[in-house]
Length: 528
Image 1: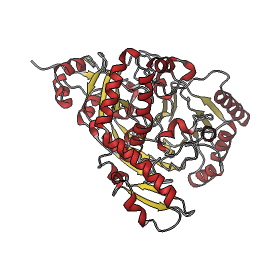
Image 2: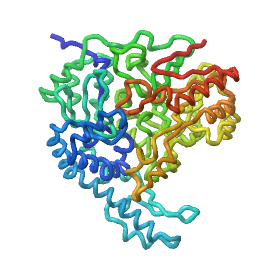
Image 3: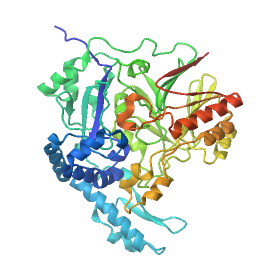
Image 4: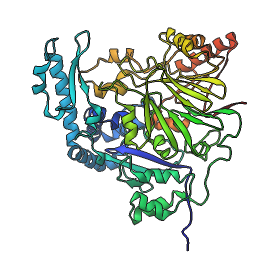
């Protein structure tokens, strides 16, 4: 008898984990990942073990949404204690690497005074040997430059720390990814496999191509109990939408947050993929609405709401090329997006400002991205100008209008924009919220709060649109969609400064005769 041909459920989700914490760029890339583990995640677990009830209640309190409270019930304290012991044991090399970085930065601060640096190398911690270069900038400020490709081959990067959890989207908000490790659950399939494991590609390709339970069991190397849990994630019929492909004209679909799907019959382009898997909900697009093959996925920057590992893994085997901005190559706070995507088993190319990727009937051009990274020297960020279906589309992500002359140069180089998409999270999180683990000296709270992860306010967005000559402009939802709270942990009301700024910007657009809108969940634009 032929085994039944099956498809992966449309509402299946994956959570990639490192030391049981949700995997993001900064927790997975070896340099920043070591710092996050040693200087945020371990202290957070230690704090939880001292006051588990305080942490759990804090994680449920709307006033502390997005705070670093471990959302695990006190009855599971022993499991957290066991996790912390395992992390200290199994990731000891990673922890030592983080402390070596702190020691080396202290050495550089004290002894790199503008003179010959050769005497410093014998004093560097042995964990950094061959993996860093000490260099001055033209103001005689010295810093460590990491040879990141080599760090991925060192003891600081260990794929044994990686695992995945597979489950079904319930529609209930998951715990905040930056604070709460994922413990085992009866309803969750646990797989101790690295993110690049070929079985993950076979699993998610089965959303559009039938397979069998036996084939997936072999591909994922499952035992009997694991195979039984996997069977609950498989169904007899695919959920793919009938209109997911385009046969004529051109179309843009807004899939939520900063995710756009641009299509013609010849090409499909996806930006900053972050999709809902809740097919029971109405009024939104899901994975079912993606075409079977996506030619290009464009990533604007490495923040966890734009470079979403759980979405990227679900696209394995369905994307021709991921396009990412090139990093500064060695700066501690600027890990390579390309190297990270390769750890997920994804095909990737890097682009610099104004480099082009041509496709039939159009092109993608990487354009500069200003601000939004707390004034840190982070180069791995890009906006994109896309010529598709005879129109010019500007994908602005969270780029700021702090110097609108930049966008004048973009227009001069590429021409006016027909449709622009911008982010207006103009009162973002303070610097320490995202980057504190990477600093080896304390950053004063007052300083941190002046350097926020903010995009454009109304005046800056107006300046961007003016300089680009845009005829239409649409503002992304800023974490307002209900299905992404586990990553965004944001809350707004009618008095929120951000929403007031968007309203002010839309009023400005109306006065200038520019079509505008504030997006939420889904939208569609078509033309021939």
